[in-house]
Amino acid sequence: MKWAFPLSWLELSAALLFFGLYLGYALRTRRLAAPLRQKAWRLGWKLGLRLAYFALLLVALLGPAYGVTQQPVRTAGKDVWLLVDLSRSMDAPDVVPTRLQKAKAELTALVSRFQADRIGLIVFAADAFVQCPLTYDQGALQLFISTLQTDLVPVGPTDLAAPLALALARISATPTLAGSPPRATALVLVSDGEDFGESLEPTLRELTRSGARLFAMGVGTLDGARLPRAAGRYVRDAQGRDAVSRLAPLPLRRLAEQTNGQYFELTDRRNEFPLLLNALNRVEGQAEQVRTVSVADNRYRYPLVLALALLLLDVLITVKVIRP
Image 1 (spheres, helix red, strand yellow):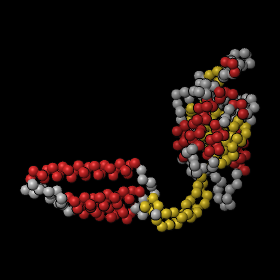
Image 2 (cartoon, rainbow, N blue to C red):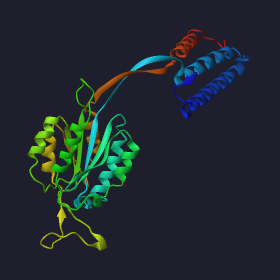
Image 3 (tube, helix red, strand yellow):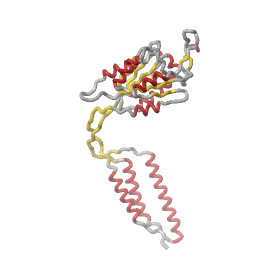
Image 4 (cartoon, rainbow, N blue to C red):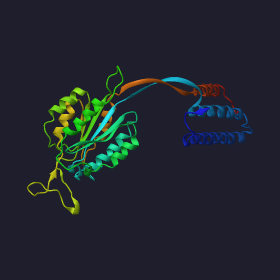
């Protein structure tokens, strides 16, 4: 026999509470009966009855399982590509401690919520690279996320079209089962929105035709911040002034709206990663196969029915302990 749930402090506490309350009840009845020269021994058989149905209720709660039944299990899942901006502007500290560090912490928590889905990681700045292919291995993916730094990619102006084109290439190369539709795919673009590349329109049209939905997470603030360098210095622009990087939500919002996705923000005052998580959960995965598995049959019904019968018997049969 196996048990569906282990014996925990909750069940032990309930048992101790039952015995404590019943002991108090018996002592009180005995104290009231003593001045009338009567005995409370008639409660004895009630105690045995109540111990029996309380124990049966506890057994039913733990879920005794014996025997094996065959049950069909349908496996379904979707592909989620994380597209993370590693340009120098992601080092801006307008989101504490930096845009990238805050996004990494939120992405690590997000990955742990999609155990049935394949997740891949693409990093980009001027060019895009697959940091981790689609995988069910959450531990490996979280390790890749923890190592993300802006110096992992060549320095250059941010191009939002590069990661989208790479994701499209990976989507088209994903094999599908014969006769089945392609897997549902979602793209999560994490960036401050600064785009110095060419027009996004050709890539956007291909992305729309692919059926993939894009969810954009804008990281940063509209006021922006200077970009730190070593020795307490800051990145300077062509005019020799301190460069200030600001959140540019419009390109990200447009990408999300045209692919039936949504736009969210991670700022110094707002964290919409929980909303992103809910949106991804609403993307229905593609059913892949139905297989039969052997599972232990939970027989909790038998002790539960017997316990309820004894409880009914306890209610119907009354015992007078103190008689006039």
